[in-house]
Length: 220
Image (cartoon, rainbow, N blue to C red):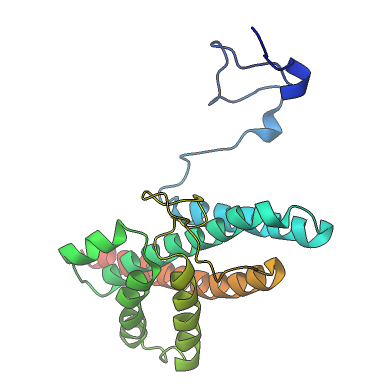
C-alpha cells in the first residue's frame, strides 16, 4: 500500500487479528485477571474504580509534572462520574430506607447525568433518614459545602460530557472559554474530600438498609 506507515512507526505490538479474543482470562498471567459478576450489588466497585483511576492519574501528573494538558480530561471525567454514581446509589438506598417510591420524574433524573438535579433530589432525604434512624442531622455547613462543590462542577460540566468530548453535538467547543487552567492537585484533593464524605453516607445507609432487611425477614 502506498504511504502506509511502517509497523514500527505505528506500534511496537503486532496489528489486530480476527482471531484475537479481548474479553478472556489468561491462565499464565492469572494475577492480571479481573473478577466480574461476583457480587450482588456491584455499584460500589464501579464508583470505586473510577475514583481510583482518577486518583492514580492525578498522582502521576503531580509527581512527574508531565501530561497535565491531556490527562486533565480523564481525571475530571472519572472523578465526576464517580460522584454521579454514588449520588444515584444513595438516592436509591435512602428511598428504600424511607419506604418511598420514586416518581417518574425522579426515575428520569436517575437516568441522566445532571449532578444538581441528583443532589437536589437527595439532599432532603439525608436528614429524613437521620431522623428515622434516631441520629443527629447532618451539619448544615457540611451540606452547604457539598452544595458549593456540586454547583461548581455543574457550571463547567452540566451533563457529564464536557470533559469527555472536545465538541458538543452542534460542533461547538464543549468547555467554556473562561476555563483556562485547572490545578490538578487542587482539583483532585477537593474531589477526594467530596467523594470521601458521600461514600461514608453511602456506606452508612447501606448498613442501615441491611439491618432493615434483616429485621423485616425476622418479623415475617
